[in-house]
Length: 198
Image 1 (cartoon, rainbow, N blue to C red):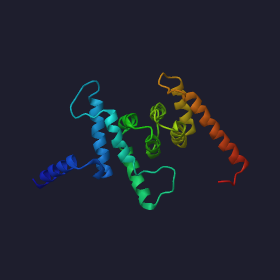
Image 2: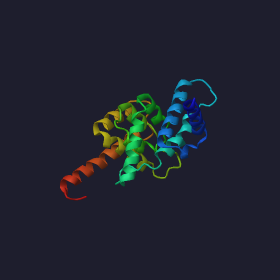
Image 3: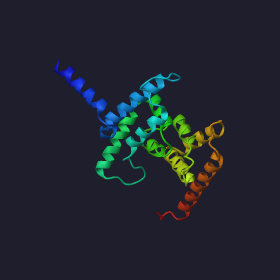
């Protein structure tokens, strides 16, 4: 009886505790539930089911403290490892839907936290576009390209070729991708010419 009462109170607590005050485990579990409801209600208007746009800010909150591409303190490293384990436990379908719901600004962080980035996840990431008010969209695209490239240069190439061959390619995708490849080539040539340079 004690355990049922404890479970009931924990459920009540989890239901009413604001998302930002929850532990990463509770946040990921909540997102998993929302993604399941979204997937199960495809094409059906159901109360209590958040849209992809409504899920987006929760993904931003989950990833808010996660920094990619810089040296981390011990505690930050442990928090990041913990989040990586939690995301890995979501499974392929949930990760795919999470990527579909995520804002382009969160995509590099999300990719950096994944133990493995699949071609489908990379394809979805590459079809996202910055909002019209973004003043430096090329920088945003470069961050997405770089995040995928850090997982695998071959993966980036395969996913980009898939986007180019699809009807989902964002405007100027081909030009943006070519520009990024030229930047990477320049960096490679510079590293060969000046191997000791940082």
